[in-house]
Image (cartoon, rainbow, N blue to C red; front, side, top):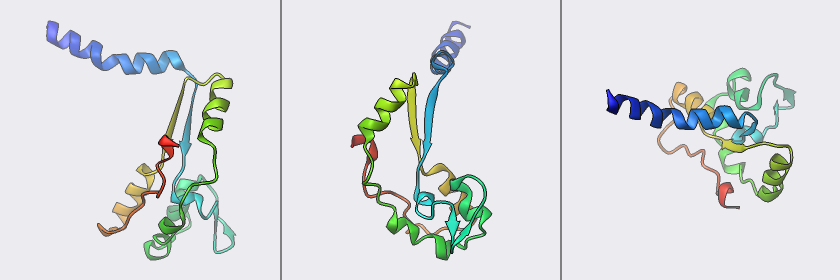
Length: 123
């Protein structure tokens, strides 16, 4: 019983911290940033990370965007500073989770790479 309680306490610490933090920022940033909500000149409604799905874009046409996604024109310190000044307690950058689900559903090959060429967290 003691082991179970200590495991529960250990597992609940991050959730407790998150509940107390209450205000943070999630930045969804990936290759879907390249078309910026448009495909072949047509606006695609919904959130950016759903452009491939909602625009019914074939993988063969979408995959080359990975070579164009090279985020270099941003200031990470400015982003963090702005979030902190707004009272945010955390910032999470996510870029692969949606891409992985979209690609696996369309049978992406192991050679398909969605990885940016710059590690933004160390910028």
